[in-house]
Length: 97
Length: 393
Image (cartoon, rainbow over all chains, first blue to last red):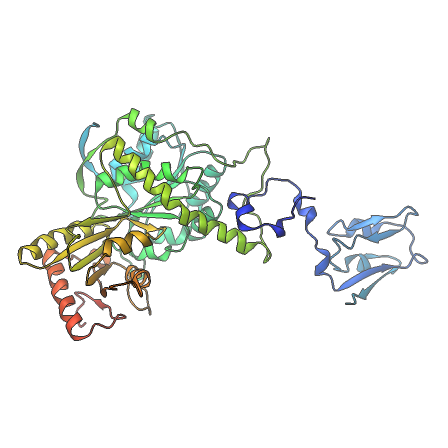
């Protein structure tokens, strides 16, 4: 895999800090901002997908069974999914060290 | 040899911009820069210059437009002074960081308050650390030559930085001087077509001016600073080639009767020509005195200054700006730092004068010389500086 932006030395940067590979924000791990992690209770979940729609980072993915889970590489732990869930099936739990 | 024409310096500067065949001029009028862009608007209107003239609503917009023009790979020009520069400040820093080449003439004028339309270098020093290549000029011919030099250096693939030309307001912008125009063929030889390293284009998408967090910001800034420091070699070779084409050779530090001098005046901008006459007069009185004129301001010509100062015993640094609450004028501060612990480190005295175009005459510079000699005997403290010609001081 190519070096990510954060590994580059000053000599390796594009002139003016320009980004030449579009969409490389996908390489940026926003998951380490997180202090709370969403956890789904599949017994309560009605598979409505509100969490998927409301997630501001598009970090929620549908599983094969039709439930939902967060991609923790991107999930910032904002809690919007838990707030919006009509059946209160998402709990925000503390990230442990 | 090009045609020699007697013309107001502002108008000949505009003619040089025309010869550089710029694609876009975005400017807002402010004294004493106005005549430059006014004349450019006439040239565009008359069809003599095929460029867009964008009359923007503020200097902030002028610099923003120029950023956009340079980002798509076209040649941009703007011009401002004093408060205009202060208003465009935000974007001035950004175009240097984004490595967008362009040329701006700064018709040097005091910063308010009190309101002053007159000349000094307080506006220059407010953006000393903005990351642009900055040069001072002494006369109309140098303005003309440096517009073409500016684009040549700015657009060089090794440089890709904006260039600012400091022209003393009124004292230089509004005087009529003989200027030798370049032949079109000479311009073509000196200034190739602008080929940007990156340009905004739908077929080759890039992101310019993006965010950089703590993990990458320092690397981006070091790359920028290194580019500015390393631009010096390109600056020097562009001056050499300019000399080979039009016969006028420029250097980072210009000397006048400096080689054997015990005492050297150091100046920036138009003061140089006045001081050269004071040097002549002092030489007639048997004083061992010479002059160094700082042409290149950023990147700071450290080695050239050290070499030019040589074995001089004392320096008289003339500043035309105040570093409020600081330990002297901005030029003196840099020189003290550059020469600190050098072998035969000279004693530096610093005089701040000529604020808001207050006249500093040949006799005044002779007085400054005598005052400096007196100070060195009585109190050679390095941090000393004084305001010359201020009532009550």
